[in-house]
Image (cartoon, rainbow, N blue to C red; front, top):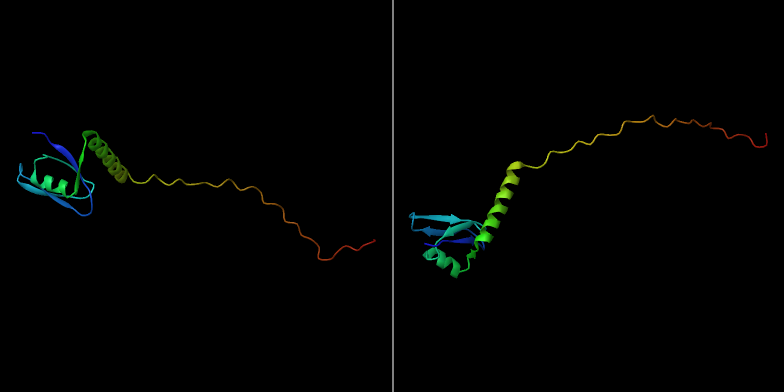
Length: 106
């Protein structure tokens, strides 16, 4: 039996019955799952536009992007670089001026 890939769209989680395994799973928006197009839950979800049908190429691309995002989250941010200051050069000499103005004409 042929199975298709679907992505949950819209707001809120979506419950899909899986008669082959006899359970019901809840999928969050953005989640990709594979199921038969004859499944009654999937047909209802497609009709109400809660899921969208994906091509195999789209599904592979989205899964790769999600895996890369998860890897980035677990990897963490890059370490902070410590900036070193340039060695201090000798300060400019301090010039002390006289308080009295020189006399003119002398």
